[in-house]
Image (cartoon, rainbow, N blue to C red; front, side, top):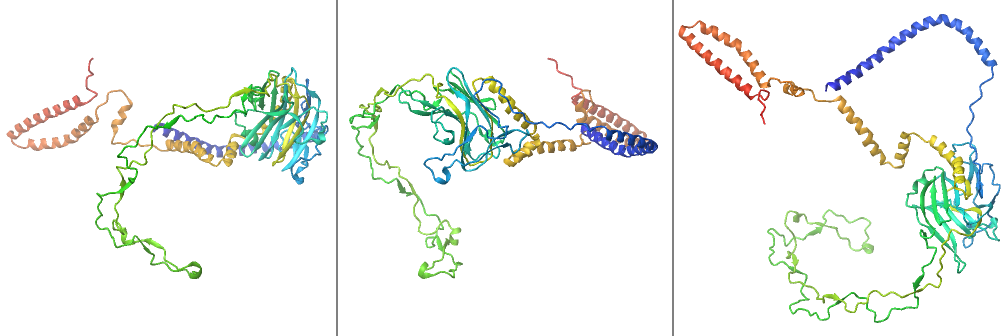
Length: 600
């Protein structure tokens, strides 16, 4: 309590000092003004001269504007595009139509533009933007030279920003296979590709595709192989409206890595972690094998030797009336349980020809509310102790059980073993063939190389600069909390419990407290180990002091009496003194501070 009082006094004194400092400072300023009036006249002349000199001097240069510098490839690469020229130079828009759909939506008439992001943090940074909604889009560009899968890895990376969010659509890229008849103006969904990679979302299904087309060495047909789904949650990459870097790394040892913002989110092997598997099984089930007619797959059968007991009654009911039940007293047999509502009135629009004869609705009989029941009384039903149900033979192990039949295995006529699925079909172009219900999807900094260090340098010069700019422009913690609460209103409850409640507790602790009561002075002695007199002893001493004047008065009155009275008074005083000494000794003995400590 003393600490609280000191804190309150300190705060009050600080506020008083601040209040008192105001007038004092004002007086000092007035005095300074008086002294400066004389100097102002002299300074005015000097300032005019200085202003004339400043006007003649050249103005300082304005602060330079921070602009985005396009990344430049520093090593071996097959494709690099940053779109900072502001044109679609080198890119080809598809003029084809999709097959098998209505003519109105078959055209690839979705618009593409090269422009800055809507909320760009880097002036001058431009990218490829998908502008149309609910339309087919197709655009592609040739590589500097075809990529051949041999002894070098493949690194594909590019940036995506869903500026307005994404409802249903994709932002994946296709690496178009090198074929003699490849025509970028006829780029459609059925154009052969080697790899498809990138984000895709529809509904609540957040995908990150990695699909490659594998050629069957026996039949020559291509089959799509899908990589396993990432274990991490991808939701935030589609909803935070930030620029993210998507990277695919394929190694000659058949391993792959998928990265988002230079962090691995999925990895595995082309031989083991794709569906369907690259290599078919060595054996398959014989399609011509059929289960024999006498094949017994039943593990249990009914015991053929079992006989129904003679006392088994299959006709006994499951429920019977309770013969021990007795009708409760006061049961109203002649009163119906429900009666017609006497207050009901036939509607005015009731047509008996169409609706039939009108009847008042039924309501519970009010007479039955105080009675145990109304109507004809019937005995309650109970379980029949003799009920056994229909008799069935018990189940036993089937002596002829042969197990579950399966067709025999035969060698797979289509079996092959490709131990190097990395050696895919070479590709010579990169393309975007998309359908999206969201517009303003931003693409930037496409890069294809076989050197991981070169790819990381390109990423740091491009995406790294974007990340730093977006991080610097992010709102503070309070704004982030408010934004999160607007999206999830239940967070306001968490904020109240974590912020307001501690403040209330601090205020209650600092501004309230129990006052020490004068009726319990013994509590003061608990703060020291020094021996203190008992409270009871002090009270008795105070009472004895109060009784001393009364005792003196009685002695004076007794002194006026005879000698016999004096003797008896003296004897009485002696007895009183001895009794008082005994009571004080008892009090001291009872006091815990005067008790001797026990010896072990």
